[in-house]
Image (cartoon, rainbow, N blue to C red):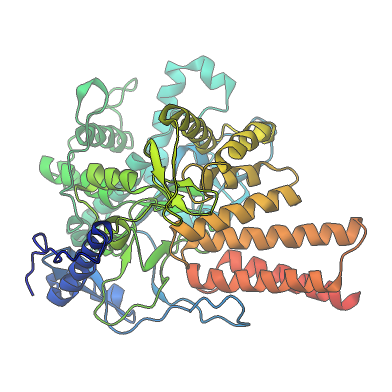
Amino acid sequence: MPADLSQFKLPSRSDVPEEMRAQFEAFFKSKMGDLLSEMNAETSPDDALFRDELAGSPLEVKTSPQRGRGLYAARDIKAGELVWRAPKLTPGETLLKTKPLVSVLSKPNLYEPAAGQKMELHCNHCYLLKPAQRCSGCKGVYYCGAACQQDDWPSHKTECKALTRVRQLWVQSYPEKAKEGLNNSWIQAEGARALGLLTWARKAYRDQHGRDPDYWPKVEKMYAEGPDMGTGVHGIPAADQMAIHLSYYVGAAEPPKDPNNLELIDMEPYGFQDEQLMSFVRSFVLNAFTLSSFDLKPIGVAMSPLLALFNHSCAPNAAIVFPRGGKEMVAVANADIAAGEEVLTTYVDISDDKETRQGDLQSRYGFECECPACTLDAVDPRNCLLHECGGLARMPETVKCDTCGASWTVSPNALRDLVNEGLSLVEADDQDQLDPDDLPRVAEVIARLEKIMPPSSRPLLRLHTIAKNLHVPAAQPEALAYAHKALAGAYKVYPRNHPSVALLRAESANLAAQIAVHIAENGPGISEDEIKRCIADLRTAADHCDLAFGKESTIATSLRGFAHDMDVSLQAM
């Protein structure tokens, strides 16, 4: 079989529509490309480098001409088949558990509360959301207790010096802002902080042992050959600018030569020549993961050379999650994976339409995805219109239903304006600029979009979730209706056992149970059968979370606890 499928063409047939032939041709190329990649994959020279970390896992490092280095199944891997009515589901298999080599919270999660204000904050060590106290030295990070602060001190000690110096200089420059409080603009961005922690840890090891730590060759082997990172401020290339920021930040921990300014230091004592420093910066940008809470909220950035070995697909068979909200990263199989098959995660948000996904992959990594989700030329449920028969249609001026074949005309300008209005609300939510008072405006935009779009289409999928979250109190039938719509849309765009689907299913089951409890305690009462149905839904949602997050995730544990409490109350009735 030829390695190059670019010239492959199916023969034309009069009884096969041209559009169907083209779709099958694209799908065939994608699937055969995957097969060729797996057939031609050979054990990678880097397998020995990661052998200790992969010991006991069902994975091995291989290299293929099509995809380069990646992780492959060394044996058959089973994911639970999702049989909704079954009383018990087979859990998804945990492929790898590891701690990131470095991880830091993002600036929005280092919020400085007002004087006397008590609130839960993310601990700088365990990352869990708890009542926390600020580090008395740098006044930049928070800890949930003495144990976490002591455990984190070997890592934070040098960073504390750097942050303290940066804060002192900021106070000198902006005394009025410092008096106002509630301002953490002086804290370095998470990228510089993460690279700084790695740099200080490397130097400390080199000073003590006279060589690099054992993990450093894995850092140097990370992919760093993506496209240009673009231009930062003042026309300076972004990678150069990040390296400059890192040099200033690392230097902030050294004894100052000028007490009123940070110095751009020589990075050679830290083990970096110029090209090595640039490669270090680029490899971090290209391989960093989003640090997330147990319920998938982004809270920072993390890096793991081991998990960075996974290659990308917009139709992944595995996911990387933080199932208990702490420092443990877990790779979970979300589908059955045969021995020799490559294990693939995703580098982008697969709820975005194909054009957006491909643009993100090209601009950041420099490649075009050729997975089935990108090559099958069907109507994309993420970017389409809805016909009255329930069929879908693409978004040009004249649209045609993919189910009944009916055609109709839409106004491109009116459609674009409405979509942009919805996207502006999504952007505002991403920046925490929406509150319950905005719910009527969000609901009004949703109502207009629902007349022309399915719940899977962008931006309706996100808006349903936003509307659900804006309800206060949360346990309201209207919030549950939005949760059900978000879940229905998610099933169309994500793999069935994807963490995003499991989370939405968990939220729907949890909301329904809360409403049932509220009615039972405060309303006209609720039937025993309805309570039993809620208990069953909670347990089924927990089983679904086992498939998406691995066993014993915080979400699944919470759902099973709620189901148990409802069951106990039911028995006491």
